[in-house]
Amino acid sequence: MLGTDFRQGSPNWLDLGSPDIEAAAAFYGELFGWRFVSAGPEAGGYGFFQLGGRTVAALGPLTDEGATSAWTVYFNAEDIQATAKAVKAGGGRIRTEPMDVMGEGWLAQATDPQGAEFALWQPAKTGGLQLTSADNTLVWVELHVPDPGAAIGFYEGLFGWRHEEMRAPGMTYRVLSTADGDQQQNSFGGVAPLGDEVSGAGSARWVPYFNVPDVDATVEAADANGGSVLMPAADVPDVGRIAWLADPAGAVFALLKPNPRQG
Image 1 (cartoon, rainbow, N blue to C red):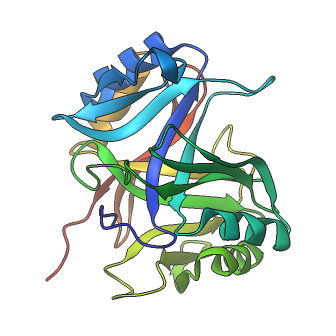
Image 2: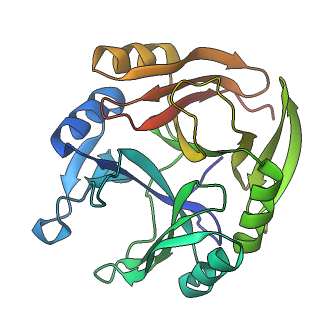
Image 3: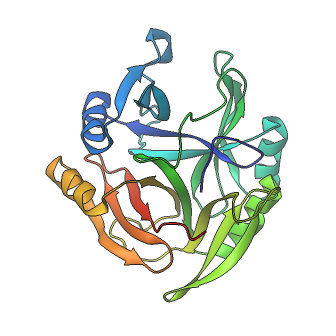
């Protein structure tokens, strides 16, 4: 599962683009107990979701014309210029060229060859998220694409990721891990074939999963606060209990209560 010892290709940041900052902060505050803290007037409305004083995600206004509300997963880039070039060489697109963000780090926004959007972060003063895999924090990221094999090749070219194939009901699931260290301990996400089983999930995308102590109760809270249930709570063998949701503005995310690890 995710940690905060970030290395090349680790998910190290997560933010939400929303048309209504106040409403989004209220929704996720009710759902996860997060507190929204502004980054200041120079940040253009951007700020941080915090839990117990530690940053667990971020929130900002939509800036591109025609953009819709969505979560964006960022991956650690030790050399963001070289990684951005590798995105283009692999058939992807750089939507925002690498730029310095007020000395906190370097940012680039990208789209992979199958249309899934993601971002790169090269840390400087801000290394990344301060808490992951605890209750109500990011625990897993999952890529849904038409051609998982091609996606694996693209991202391995960027980050050197390793993968392990697992059989799941009706499909092959690829578990992703960083290039070095213990493969199981450094797993952080997976790749699944794009299907139509989840309403509203008809395009390639990265989906963040948040660790929650009670999936069913969190689904009920989301529904009560204007969210939508895309996939009801269900048990996945050898994984845990999951559900897919959309917030009131339509941003898709998922919940996971992992099975206890066998030691």
